[in-house]
Length: 301
Image 1 (tube, helix red, strand yellow):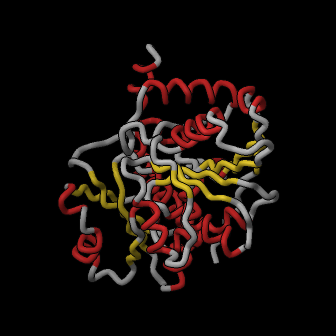
Image 2 (cartoon, rainbow, N blue to C red):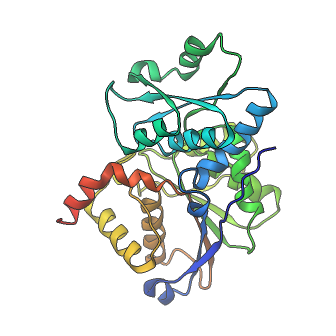
């Protein structure tokens, strides 16, 4: 069993437009768990690391893009628990940025991989580590049943009850864990996902792969702003206003789209009067670094 203490409160937040609509919004501040192993990144790693240790493996091998918060979290977790780490990087050789620099500082080995080879992650792992009994495979983003199991603890840790829970989603792993925990706990809470990719309906299928008998979640698929890591001026402007009014940092890839969607749904009177809403802040704030220039461009800096 690994020991890792963290702080993740449920913080009530009220903006004037939300008050007018008589809804009650709280944020699960998983972004406060750790500066680098933050939010659902830690939750999706927790049981993977426990499984690796139980199998006497001391080398975590994972996958991601050049700005991956998951890769950074894995690098830091490895350094924290005394494990080697390697990441297959979906990027051209020679690409570097602050996130990758921090990964190297935490001792992670980075293997640059072209997009064609990257599509078969199992083959990459087998080719490079088939003779290494210490290596443990963690899918991109911590995707899979063990990642979902960690995210179930979001629900079991709640101090209050809610009518709705909202979460941004890329692979559906976090959403699968939340929905499974809500269902098995007998809660009447409606679980909502904000896909950050185009064609986000596939998230429903991904949840079923992890939990075949899972009840459907509600997906709001019109808030991707062009696709993964894509953005538009209205999203950037919303983020600026939200952060300056609340003091809570969000970023354009995941949490910005999440809170934009919530704000828009509230404006459309989607919720009943006095609805109690919980928004999961999944961390990953270093993703903002990859959009710094676009952010300033849209704000006219």
